[in-house]
View 1 (cartoon, rainbow, N blue to C red):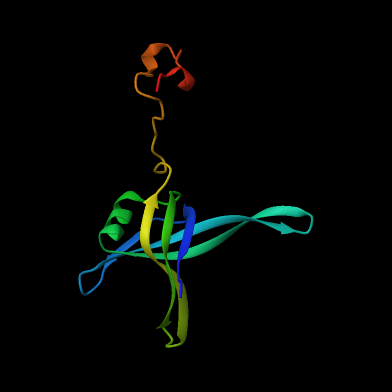
View 2: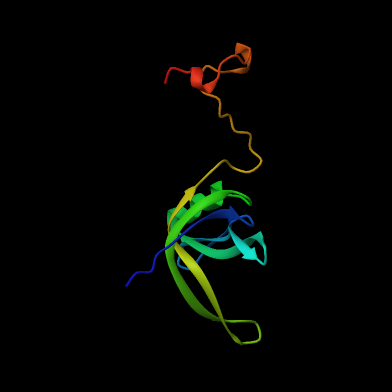
Length: 134
């Protein structure tokens, strides 16, 4: 049997980090995964929302480094768990238990300097990426 899921998407909200009674760190993520679907004669974007649960040191790192809008890669396994709501009714939640989370792109609202070394604002802006000898 094989239960493996992989997603690349953007966080729809900031991570929620908590600690269990047993002392284990748990992080919950809401991941928006986009796909194009044909509706009639037009292609439209559709976002599927995936619940991700991360444990341990990886959960701590997610809580410290991720924020709404950040793009991530997640690899894990799908599981469905049963729980009871406030009225005592049975409910089910399907989620991905992450084995691996990789941070992609840059953190939202942070300026990233993609310029190669030596190509700073004081060089007159004359260098281009294809002029660099490496």
